[in-house]
Length: 224
Ligand SMILES: C[S@@+](CC[C@H](N)C(=O)[O-])C[C@H]1O[C@@H](n2cnc3c(N)ncnc32)[C@H](O)[C@@H]1O
Image (tube, rainbow, N blue to C red):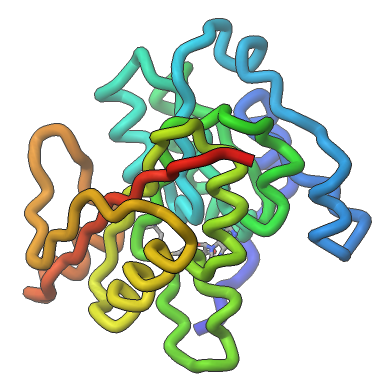
């Protein structure tokens, strides 16, 4: 279903300006665009050098806002390509006065433009679109081309933590981690969100529908 563009979207994003970088991707060739660094100045943004974690495809931001509130000594960057969705996350983080959270409005394809090597300790992939059709395989956020990007920004020993309700996508992701040289440290089929984790928007919805949640932790061995 197509979503209507929210009223005064640009104006509302601008009002959250200190919390967000909106990617200027004049160069539509994302691979080439990613080659010109515009690294986010984390120490300046957060006012400290605490470790950074990244959520890719944060949607309306429930997970990242709640996790940031629970963990004030960790900095969180959340990426979302659709500004019409991201605005809800931005306005929530603003209203809650969260200081350890920053948003990036861009596609995951260009993450290496904004993150230097070894700058992120965890990448969260929460309920990424499973895109079951074969023709869309390359767009899945656990396709090897994205795993190479995450490896490039993760610290050695850094982790990808994935949750999904889609078993076929989960199995595809496990194969993809192994093929890309990630070590699979944890696999849970029937995951129950505990005290140290936070339910995402989609997780809550799928749990209410009685669906099983799948979770994996994959560890990066080497960096770029
Ligand atoms: C199904 S939603 C899940 C939202 C949230 N993580 C949750 O668990 O409730 C997936 C989100 O990922 C975003 N997304 C998909 N592909 C992306 C990409 N290549 N770069 C950035 N965001 C992406 C979509 O726009 C969408 O908001």
